Image (cartoon, rainbow, N blue to C red; front, side, top):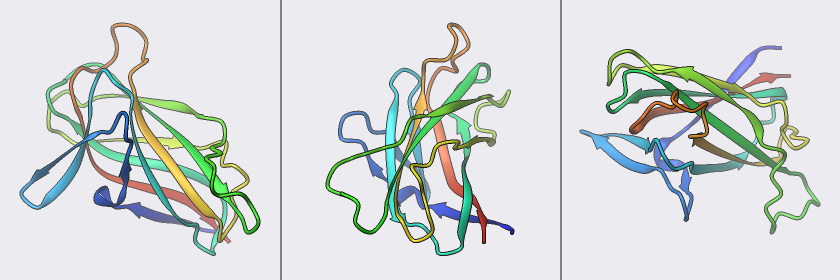
Amino acid sequence: MATSQINLPILGGVRDSTNPPGMAWVGARPYLLFDGTTDELITWSFRMPSDYASGLAVKWQYSMLSATTGVVRIGAQVMAASDGDNIDTDSYDTQNTPADVTVPATAGLMGEISLAFPTVDSLAAGDYISVQLRRENAVSPGTNATGDMEVWAIALTYTTT
């Protein structure tokens, strides 16, 4: 068993119709802007690779537009559908416990935050999967990093067969 990775293209995510993250570019490099007051969502949907065995985690490479102190928090939910499941209705599994990380001490420096998913909605190899990712702003009072979180790259990791 090894570990594999699925890169989630920044431009490939579907931004939530109610609370979407912003989108910006540095030259030809796109990135997402998750603000510091509203929980904003983005979703990726795809077929899970045939070598999927177990586990799922998400890794974000990010920087902060202006914050140099405080904490950012990310959260996630997974919906999996197998042959014969109803796919016309959202049926996301329990929200995964969020992950927190202290932001870099200088605005614009890259940091990384990871979140392991203990609940993956009975995900199996070859299933349709929809992953909702968000920045959460319900961090302990006084510790939430202010301003936009610039998300440059997102990847899912999993254990292979």
